[in-house]
Each structure stands twice: as C-alpha cells, then as structure tokens.
Length: 364
Ligand SMILES: Nc1nc2c(ncn2[C@@H]2O[C@H](COP(=O)(O)OP(=O)(O)OP(=O)(O)O)[C@@H](O)[C@H]2O)c(=O)[nH]1
Ligand SMILES: [Mg+2]
Image (spheres, rainbow, N blue to C red):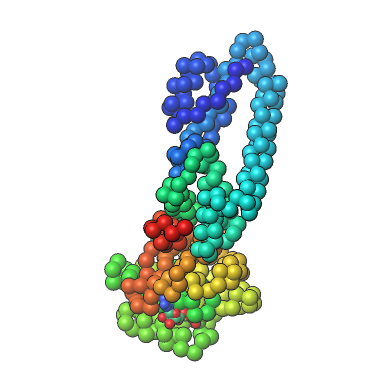
C-alpha cells in the first residue's frame, strides 16, 4: 500500500493531485484543516491536509486487515503528536525564560496582560501566534494584524436565534446597569424597530426599583407588570402574548448568595425559553468578574452585556469572561443616556476595543 500526504487548498485540488499521482483506485484515509505555513498561517489562513492510499495488488489482503502499514501510520501519528507536545513545552519554556525577554512574543504577552487579559489566555494567544509564525520573522505590524484576527476569532458570534426569542431577562450583580440597559433596548425595539414591547419586573426587593422601571415605561408608553412569584411571572408573560418582545428585569443579587440566585432561577424556569443576559460592569475588578460569571452559571445565561465601557480604559475582562465561559457578547453600553448609549458587540469590534491604542499607534 502506498500512503501519501497532500497539502492543498481544497478537496477539488486534492482529488486532482491524488488521481494524477496514485490513480483512480486511490482512497482517502483522512482529511483535516491545518494552519497554513508562513505569513498566511500566522494571519489565520488554513489549508487542507489529505492522506490518501493506493492498495496495490500484492498487498490487497492487507488493506482489509490491521496491517503493518496501518499500524505504522498510527505509530507515526502518535510520534508526531508527542513531538508536537514536546515542542509546545519547549516553546513555553523559551517564552517564560527571563533570558529571552527580548523575544517579540514575550514582549507582546506583557502587552496583553497589561490590557487585563488573564495570563493563561494571553499564553494561549501567544503560543498560537508563535506556532503559526514558525521560522517567520515577526515584526510589530504583522503582530498587530495577527493579534486582531486572533482575538476576533476567540469571540463567539451572537447567534441570530437570540433576537428571535420573545422573552429577554436581565440578571447580574447590584448596580451594574441592568434596568438602564433594559430601558435602552426596550426603547430601541419600540421606536426604531416599531415592535410591540412589554416590560415585567421581579425586582420588588429594592425600594424604588419598581418606580424606576415604571418611569421608563411611562416615557416609552409601555405597561410594566410587577410580579412577586414564578406563577405570577408565568401569568404576566401570558398577558403579554400580543407583544413582539418582552423584557424581564430582576433584582441585583450578591452572587455569593446562592440561595437568592436559585430563587431567581425558579422565576426564569417558569417562563422558558428565553434569552438570559448576564449584565456585568467593566468597573468591576477582573478577578471578581471571573468569579461572578462562574457563580451565575446556575442561571444558564445565554449571552453577556458589558456596561460602563465609558468608565474604564482596559477591556481585557471582556475576553476573559466570554472566552472562559464560551458565551457570546451581545451588547456594550457606554453611558447613562437612554436609549443611545448602547451598541451591538461584534467580535471584530470587541477585538479592536480590547487592543485599542496598542494596535493603533504601536505602543508596545
Ligand atoms: N457610566 C455609565 N453608567 C451606567 C451605564 N449603565 C448604567 N449606568 C448607571 O449605573 C447606575 C445603576 O444602574 P441601574 O440600571 O439602576 O443598575 P441595576 O443593575 O438595575 O441596579 P439594581 O437593580 O440595584 O441591581 C445608574 O446610575 C445608571 O445610570 C453605563 O454604560 N455607563
Ligand atoms: Mg435594577
């Protein structure tokens, strides 16, 4: 059996080469996308790696049995995987070694950490880039382009289904901007998109919370339902059956108070399915944000909203939370004004926000 590996741009090219080389009886053993070599790979380009085999007459029988060649192939794969693992460890050692501080990768890892990106995530980004660069000499301009592309790919696209859900609930710690953000989105839906909007609050804990939402409701001409129990919430949602979209406000909870989080959960469970936004303020310390995102997982949040972009200058926490929890970011808010201070959070926008001046003026 002849086994050959092809690195091609697409399957069509693979078929052509295999047919020319091994003839029409060849079979494809495997195909996978791998990072392209050189600058193209560094910038995120991929190629197709296809392994094909031709079962020659003399060892046809072997093709149907676990042959020496096949086990050789498996052994080779294991050896390559092991070697790759060793190279990664070596690379890590080089990057961490203090004597190599002039390496551009070490320097750029420091830049990422200065943007408040968690060290492990910064490591992962830099190893990915270093691996992609191979022997290539990486100057700062190339690095900036690669970083922008890499960060963009680390964020999940917000799924279109989110906007199809009728019910949208806002959860998160106290004072992060849940009610204000809800009002911004309610206003946009009512005025810009001409939708019929409903608002419900289960926040009856804080004095003034209901009044705050009612004030927005009056301005927007939208009724506000106030509910005290999961059953009442269910009933209120039913009453809002004629609405295109219904926003549900919840009281801010200390995330360490698992009793209260589970209470919110019983409310949300009563009206599924719904989009659950975990609202987080960028003024919160990054370690606290990591912990809050973890604690709130009991509420099965489906996307993130980061508020108070206008009150800070470092945004690495957005990546830390979104990437670690594999959750898309839906919106960013950048001020107190309703409804204008909110924007959608596309991955490229988040990458540019986080890298900011670093990729603009090259201050590395
Ligand atoms: N600077 C700034 N302030 C904001 C932003 N979003 C909300 N705020 C302010 O943050 C404060 C708290 O906002 P709320 O919407 O009441 O917060 P909440 O999460 O509903 O608070 P609780 O219901 O008490 O948990 C208000 O003064 C808002 O105007 C923002 O993007 N930037
Ligand atoms: Mg509120």
